[in-house]
Image (cartoon, rainbow, N blue to C red):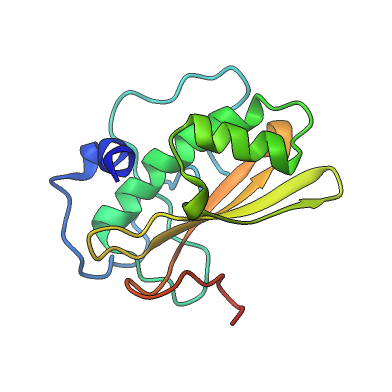
Length: 157
């Protein structure tokens, strides 16, 4: 929880748990890949406008959308540094970033890439992330889950 709070600290003053409005006029970054970090690139130091969640019906709060950008930037940067992303390497990388095993789900090798899900729900939030570890092509995408109850992967029971 302490790591989740620290990562989301820049979002402390952002709106509460009400669903986020639709996409903004600003260019989204991160989750849709339009402005993902390139290898060796330094994450922006100023505020970053979060991209709209790509899952149909996703309704993240403004705070969750802001927090998703913070998580995405640090995870993508770390995943891009893994030359051959096996599930063991991806788990270790996520653990090194502070994500505990109980929040890492469905870590699977899929050809040369590894797919995973992160449960980042806290304080009534709905934030979860779907990740793809594929070297330079790594990506992390936010989606909303029920705020309470067991973690389930979107589209599965």
